Image (cartoon, rainbow, N blue to C red):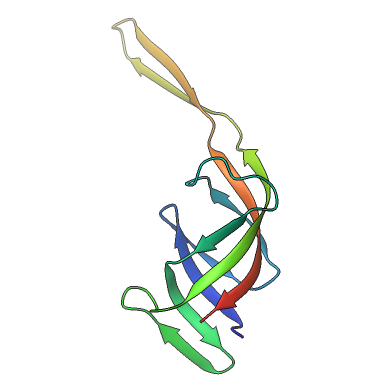
Length: 107
């Protein structure tokens, strides 16, 4: 049983332990609450006193998590303007996320 792991998901790295709840980008569509989400890109693994660093990933390691709820982030407004040219554009974006609970780190 591992103490913690560093996983990569959606271009970001997260330090996770069993029982942690975190917000990750929605890269797999249509998962419901209770579905399993597995992180296969484990960059580092810590078991008691031994630390295993991957090159770039630790072979055979994965992190099993369960989706708590799908969520959406807050709205980000993008505003572009060119001075004295009458050019103005407004755009918006809301990122989709999954709130997941880490169940186990399998090595």
